[in-house]
Image (cartoon, rainbow, N blue to C red):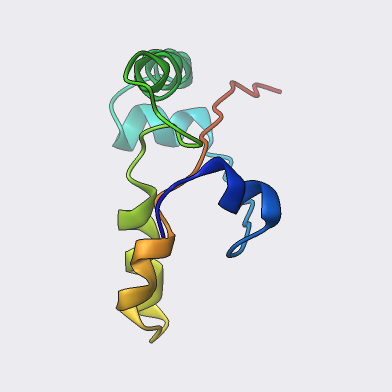
Length: 96
């Protein structure tokens, strides 16, 4: 139940890919920032910061918290959260 490379390689658990596209106007209006700033934050905090901290198979974005919210909203067993600490975040600007 620890975040190890072998568990990811051998397929323990589930892999999920999600994508969200947030229009620039909503980012600026409700998040009070720009898409470019979000991309830079992701690079500096989630990617570089995790590498410097020695992170394993993850990119420091509190995936377990997001997964727990999903479990609770859908009536799943919250105890399974111990299996969900790993993830990667990618951000890019998609104007046009």
